[in-house]
Amino acid sequence: MGILGSYRMRWARKRLRYRADFKSRELRRVIDRTNQIRPDDILLFSTQRNEKVRLPYFLDYYRDMGVTHFLIVDNDSTDGSAEYLSQQPDVSVWTSRASYKKSRYGVDWLNHLQSKYGHGHWCLTVDPDEFLLYPFCDTRPLRALTDWLDTCSIRAFSAMLLDMYPKGRLDDQPYLPGMNPIDIACWFDSGNYTMSRNPLYWNLWIQGGARARAFFPKEPERAPALNKVPLVKWDKRYAYVHSTHMLLPRGLNLVYDEWGGEKASGVLLHAKFIDTFADKAAEEIKRQQHYAESYEYRAYAESLGQDTQLWCNWSEKYINWRQLEILGLMSKGNWA
Image (cartoon, rainbow, N blue to C red; front, side, top):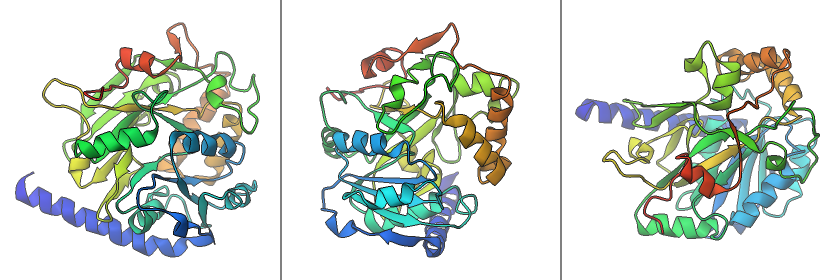
C-alpha cells in the first residue's frame, strides 16, 4: 500500500478514536473503582448483556489467572447482571441502553475505556463465554506471560477462538452459576479450519470448526471469524477495528511468523454452546443487534430447530493446553 496506504490507516485509526470518544456519551457510570488500579495491574475489558449465570465463574477464572481489575459495559441487561457486577470489589461497571449494533458491537465503548484506563497496561478483552489458554497456563500466571512479552518487546498476543460443545443435545445438562462450562462443553473440532492473510490489516483470517460445519455448511465463507488478538499492551493511540479480530496500528496484527517459524499464541475456549444458547439465540434474533441483521443467530436458530448436535465422530475431547499445541491450534513459540 506504500506511503498513501499508511496514511489512510493512520487516518482510519484517528476516526476510530474520535468515534469512541463520541460514543462514550452513551455510557452511564454504575460503579467506578478505577482509582484502585495500580500501574502494573492486568486489566480485563468486556461487554455483556444478560449473562448473570456465567459471571461468577468468568470472574473467578480470570482472577485466578492474574487479572486484578475488570472494566465491564452492561448493555441494558434485565437479569440483574449489572447489579451483580456492581457488588464485586474489583469491578467497575458502565451501562448503556444505546444500540449495541451502532456502537460497532460494543467496540466503540471499549475503545474509549481502554484509551482512558488501559494506557500502559496489559489489557485482556474477552466475552463472558471466552476463556483464555496460553502456554504453561497450568503452572504460570498471566503475569509470567506478560513479563516475557515485555522482555521480548512484543505488544500483542493472539488466540484462536475454539468452539466447545457437549456430546448430545445442548440442553441435556443445565448450566448453573459457578460451574465451569468446559465441564459440560468439553468437545471441539481439531481440524476443519481455513486461514488467509488480510492484505489490508495484515491479520490472519481463520474460519471453520464446529460452527462452519454445523451451521454454515453451504456458505462456509460466512462462518464467524476465529482469529483474535485479545491481549495487548495498550496505548491510548490504539483501537480495535472489528471485535478483537484486528487492531490499528496494523503492526499489532502481525502475531504470526512469516518465515517458517512459530510465534507464541493461545486459544480462547468458546463456551457458547450450552443449555442457555437457544434462549440467547432467540433473543438476539428479536433484537437484531448483531452483524448482518443477526444472520449468524438466524442460522443457529434454524439448525437448532432441527435438533442439531454439534458432536460428531471426529470430535476431540479437551484435556489441556498441551493437547491443543500438539494439534497445532496454539504454540509456545520460543517461550520455554
